[in-house]
Length: 254
Image 1: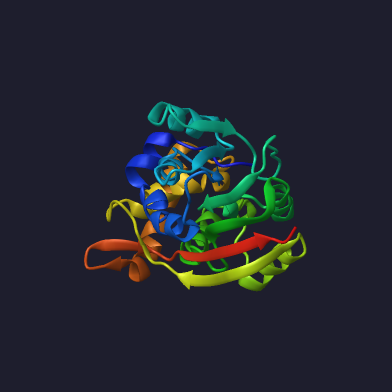
Image 2: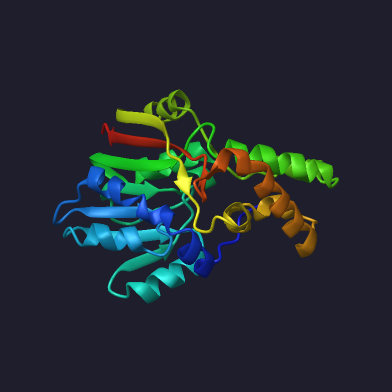
């Protein structure tokens, strides 16, 4: 079960995904001549930002729609349709960069092994994705509304992977990485439209929960979920979702 990606909705109402990633590029500190993989590149905005530092930036994403959009936006860059849990490039990388992608990869061990396999010895990974407790308010509210409509089993259809620091650090260490930095932090995230923010978020990121539900009823459930989250999310006329992020910097030992 996978999420379907609507590129226009992603770029128009969820641009915060790549805008927050700019700080992660600073942590990556790309250098001229480095070969860097942007894993889960989406529409390519951060791949382009990495390339502007003089690095050879290559983007990879599982979504053909996203890759097509990236190619159209940045025809001078190299993009590939690749699964984060099953990919291999002929030439290894100095670094693997990934922003807001690995929480979509439940096969976390396979993804870590792929990153290691595609890195040079001493190469680094710079990652940020949803951590333990990410969007818990939204998912809890959605589960209540699904159950009320008779779709309680759908609440188990999550495709997310939100690990703790200890869980993910142990996974990296077991696969030949030295963890240089790992942090879990709250990052309340403003949604684009205060009137439909959670509705739009669920439309973009949660269609796995809508299996067997017709469009009108799914919209009702999304609206009810937004109303249930308002006491926590609405502040001075704006909606802030309860994002929690893991940020990791690690080095391949050999």
